[in-house]
Length: 325
Ligand code: FRU
Image 1 (cartoon, helix red, strand yellow):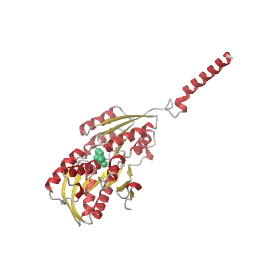
Image 2: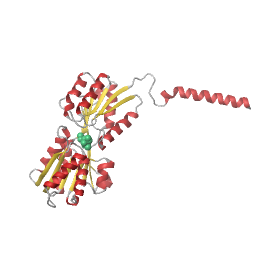
Image 3: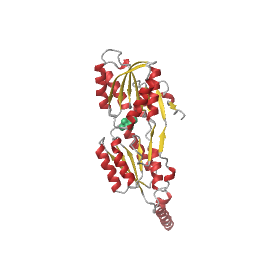
Image 4: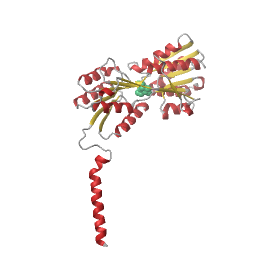
């Protein structure tokens, strides 16, 4: 009886050891011979909700592929620091660089990496010129135009607007502003105050305080367009502090579930337009670029957008269709 037990134990031990040895191959882990795909990822400022989410999504998608070795860096809203990070990735000869640049000042660093033969995927804020491998982002010009259309319809062609614009040295700032202005042209909608809020809620709050003190009469501001949700929400808070939030309509961009969409549900924002971060597509493209499948990676990947308002938020918003070209 005892001998039988020992034999059972030994057989079980042997089986467990075999499984343990084979595990990396059988369990979807890295194959012993596979070379790691080294991705260097530089985020311009993790300290913002939208970018925090982007980093989480990048990490989660990379974690699905055990062959990926992801090195993440946060430039903390500092252009020269982000340039140095790109250089470090080039010196380390990573297989692919993913960068979400602070602004166009990152153009030369990206071009240098590209010229050094390292594929570069640019996310969200564009660089200038064509020295990068793939750009992934939503269509900010479309979003700007749709905000303009929504504002025109909501204000019925008449009213005073405050526009809190993104960092002027970053491409999405003008892309979200110019088509917006174009769309309200020829109406009785006036921009009574505008300012660069550098994509930051704190700055937006100060700018909104200035807008309120320059337009002190009740009802003299009818709508605030924040180029991102942190700005639109900060503007609401500034107006609330002044006891004036109920005079105004607030619209933003980003539509994170726990930020903009939540704010629409709570009645803080009247509308927000989705700005997807493209993390899944970036990791997918990085793997293709690192494994000889460059031909499968388009030069530009345009992400879709949705509009969330108080009327449609519980139904998941509505898709915005790009006009046929
Ligand atoms: C975060 C952010 C987002 C915005 C995007 C524009 O830094 O400001 O809120 O949609 O960048 O590039």
